Image (cartoon, rainbow, N blue to C red; front, side, top):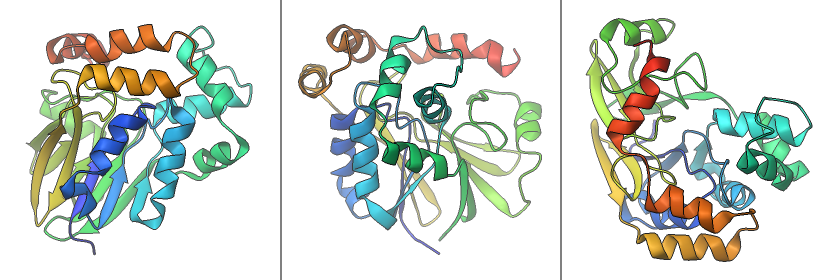
Length: 251
């Protein structure tokens, strides 16, 4: 059983944002770091994978839908994203070692954490890496997606929607740390800590000019500066994201 666990998600190829979070005192002191997917699809996918790999056994890496899709594209498999320039370019950045890493990366993990018991980690939901569930999803929907979870799993951690929250769903705690690289709503790199039965949602403030400059200087992605201006300086609000995701939540 581990005690303090830092949870990161949805880095999306933004290495400077990841580095800032990894240097946070609460993350440095964590016994374990769990990263719940979508490490890639962004301007520095290979660099982010290399940095996460360098954490060694201290990190548990979960594969997200973007990682799965990019892996398939890197092998010439059509996943319907060939017209997406970020995906098309990103697929060319994966080396054989990156492919092997993503091949063996699990889609979920259950970890015993002091004060929480069995905690289930996945990217989106326990049954799918691209299913959408939101902080205000109806209880019946939560029950549906958690239907096959073991009864002794009383905490579920997910990512995917880039919006941080912690809420109780039918006596089960659900935590989303938000996104490190592409947050919706409040700017900055979002993450969480599970420690002694308590959840802390945290945010690392990052100057937009600094982030854009650092990523642009070290990424070969075509049009990276314009992409960053849109993604970093003008991110979607939480209200916009909820409206966009709503139909995928069955509303």
